[in-house]
Length: 182
Image 1 (cartoon, rainbow, N blue to C red):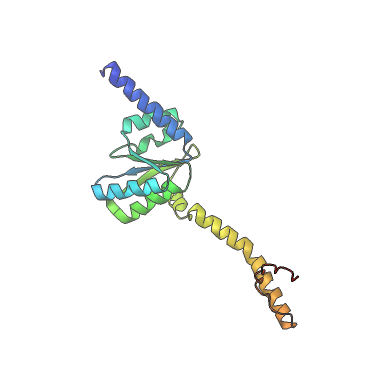
Image 2 (cartoon, helix red, strand yellow):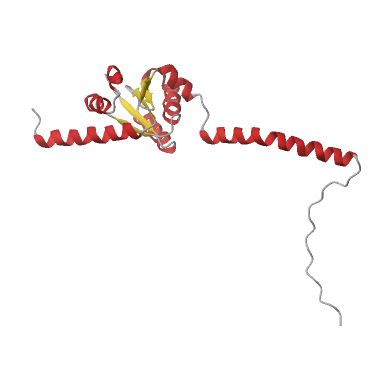
């Protein structure tokens, strides 16, 4: 029987994990057995760069946290070595973990995950991982929105030049006013 101090420390860890899970939009569970220190360091660096909270967690503590968060369906995935990647961006943890699963083949395996408080399967995680990063998506949308306007401007300029209108020139620099002669 664990003493009261150890038990209270574990309860605090479970409470903290439960809060992180409830506040995260998405999470991915990974079996990391066999990765080297260098590979783990590179993974953690990429997680930090993408604002993904990544940690190795004891299965028992994670089981309690999942049950507290209403994700008891994930209990079956909690065996062997387990790490958890959490983020408020639903795509980031899936993308980072899927990239490493491809790089490290047999050493790094995605077990499953959750999104918006519901368990998701490996196929869903892989489809999320294929979505481009948010800045790339924003650039694509802006490019799509600007394309018709840019096309219209080019056509109007060609029509104006064809009708003999002078091409638009850059504004000339204004000269400083000269003092009046007396």
